[in-house]
Image 1: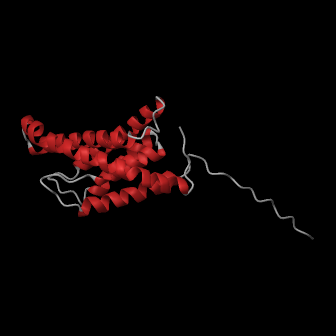
Image 2 (image 1 turned 120 degrees about the vertical axis):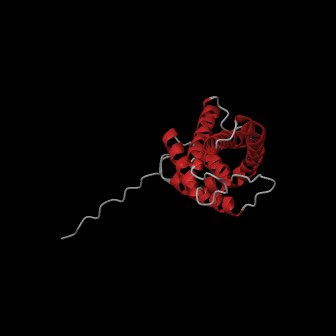
Image 3 (image 1 turned 45 degrees about the vertical axis):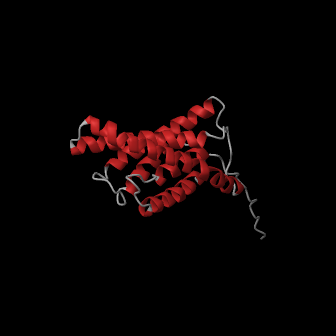
Length: 189
């Protein structure tokens, strides 16, 4: 009675594997830690979380639902470390920022500029600008502040943070990309 041993079947991983979850979770965790320990200098603190999901969005090209999920998780994770008067505003702002990053990456890929060297910088800047604008608008509404306060005080700070985040995203993107692709990630266009 010899038992026949079944043949082992190997299945190659697809682009839609769960690898994006691991890289997103890792970078969001790093972003939250850096967000928590970064000092506020002159009213300005880089939003490391936005930089990190901008990097993962550039690497993994998520669909809109995944981007919204990433934004939701990012918003929830920075609520406890938020230094603002209304931490729950982070949920809406990170949803908007992550969606912006997703749509920008999709637009660059659609016009065959997905590999353009400055895409991470542009995505980091606009994701931060949208997220920060949404957050500060919510804060103004909650605190009952006049529009002029948002325009003259809060918006300039958002722009400065957006520039910082754009630079952070650009500088960190290539090293993270190198690690991601040397360990089995799949590039696409």
